[in-house]
Length: 89
Image 1 (cartoon, rainbow, N blue to C red):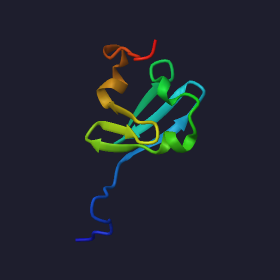
Image 2: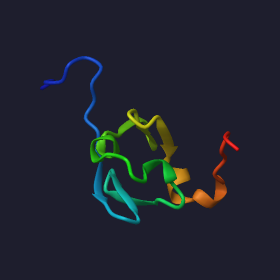
Image 3: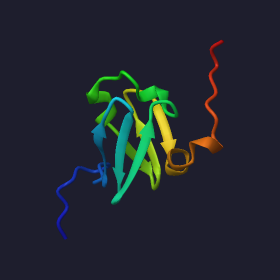
Image 4: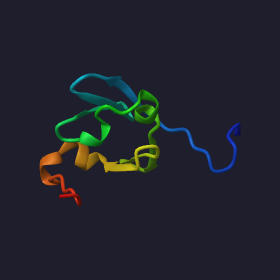
């Protein structure tokens, strides 16, 4: 058995594959997920470095540590089921 990873690290099959003026694409386990900025405003106008730094904390659960954004595959695929809520007025 080959194990070249340090304890606690994992190989993840997720990556941000494209960033455009409309949104960003996340490739997760062979499935491409599009996140338009009008549905996911936390990503708009952020540095590329913070957008591509994404972790899969559990199957189908993604986290962008530099942005403190935490989304599930269901939220990405069906944002209409999860209306945006802001604590600021």
